[in-house]
Length: 335
Image (cartoon, rainbow, N blue to C red; front, side, top):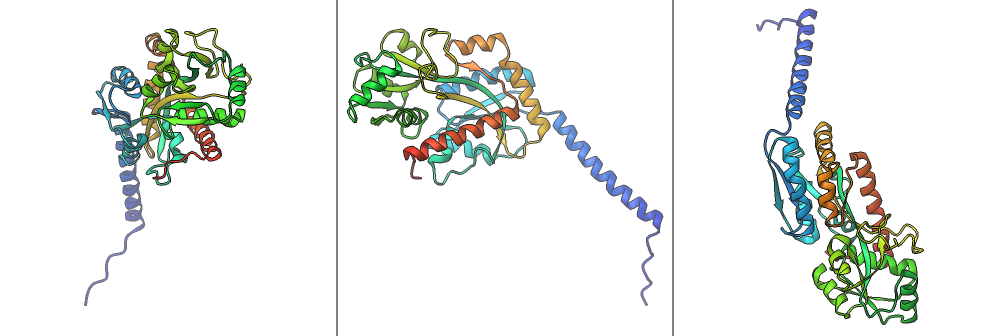
C-alpha cells in the first residue's frame, strides 16, 4: 500500500510563499534593470515617406542629435507607401520595447477618417512621446487673382461660383483637407484639383492653371519670397517671422482656422512608461536647443517638445477635427 504523502508543514508553506514572492520580485527587478539601462542597442526610427522629403529631413535632423543624448545609433528607415500607412502599421505591430519608433505625422490623424480598412488606430495602437515640430500652411494664389487678402478672395470666389479651383498634393492629404475646410467655413463653390505631389500642385498655381491652394510654409516660402505666388494668410496661430506682415487666417476673420503640418515620436502601444519618459526627456532637451531652433527656422518650422500627455491630447484633437471635415466634405479613400 502506497504511503501517504507528507503534509506540508506551516513552516514549509511559509517558505514556499516566500520563494514565490522572491521569484516575482527578482523578475520585476531584472525587468526594471533592463529598462533602466535602455537603450542597449541601436533604435530604428521609421519614416513612412520616401527619403529626401520633408518628414525624412526632420527625422535625420533629430536622429543625429538623439544619438548623442541616448548613447546609441538611431537608424532612420524609410517605409513609404499607402499614404504613410505601410510604415505606420509596421510600427504599430512592432515589439513594444522602445527599439522601433515612428516619426508620426498629421497623416496619421487624417487617415483615420479616410480609409475603411486602416491597419492601425492612431490613438489606440501608439504611445505618443512628444511632438517634434509644427509648420503652418499658407493660403496662396497665383498672381493673376485680383484678391490681396482673405475677404477679397472669398468675395472673388463667391462672385464666380464653380469657376475657380484649388490645388492639392493629392486626394485625402492635408492640402485637400485645408481646401475643404475653407469651402465649408466660407460656403464656397470651388473645384478640387489633386496632383501627385506638392511640387506639381504649386507649379500649376504659379502658372495660373489653378487659382489657389494651401501649401506648407516650409515648402512654399521661397516661392512667396521670390514673388512667384501671392500669400493671402497663414493658417497658424501666430504670424511667421519670415512674413511678419502676413496676417493669420484667424486675424483675417476665420476663427480657429489652423492647418499645421506636424510630426512627432510614436512608439507601439505597451511600451514601458519609463522608456517613454526617457525618450521624451531626451527629445525635448534637443528641441530646446538654440541650434535646433535655428535649423527649424530656416525651413519655416517651429520646435515643439510637448509632454507625452500633451501630445496625446493634441493627436486626439486632430483626429476629431479632421474626421469632422472629411465627413462633412465627403472626403474618403475607398480602400
